[in-house]
Length: 309
Image: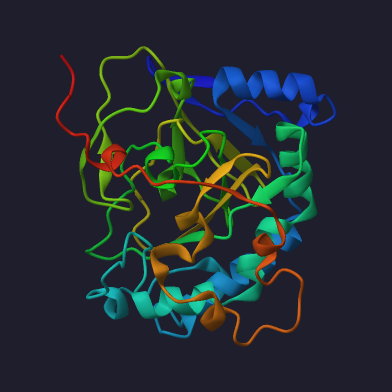
């Protein structure tokens, strides 16, 4: 790790060596609120996912036709009037197309991810069916994701861990994710309205906790507790599409809120998303488990009165 400013650290601590030591991995998770694994996933597997996400963009003419597709250079003229739907970075119709893609939906079942969360939870793992992609096409409507805690949007057990997966190399200048070290211990904080994905920003009072930024490479995995504060950095490379996925995991024995069992943004029904899939046990996989459902607490979304004294 290197310090860029007094409250910003550049470079995550790699926890790859702790995968063989569950107690040490769990202790670091409890202390830091995040875990980072360099090159946890084979690059070829992530490249296949990248190809699928870029296909959604390319077939709509949003990529520069004069450059290789994998460079993800934007067609500035074509995206000038593009409206990012729900903070996804693309239109509702394109996002629906993306959500139907089988590889995107089943990637969270990658054996290396399942093994990671089995080690972390010391139990059977439930990947949340609600999967999220960010296909951040640079355009006038682009807004970085504001500082927030995922628990506000997920609820259920607080012991949900988000897997933030860069789908390709994501240097800090491209607008990768940054986390506030140890902030999961601050509890659930109040929020205010904001632009960007989720439309809510956490009210953060004075803290000495450092932000950690990172230059991600394909195959890296960042995972963090549902109460850890995080946000995206601004994209300073306005001609490149930034790709990432959010997959969420919890112990199968813990509570889950039922909104986590429906497609993201209710962009379609599961029947619609599965319509062109071949037969696979991954369809409706969560229905084979005895889930403990917990009620939604709307007050967590709108407790905006108390800011900082």
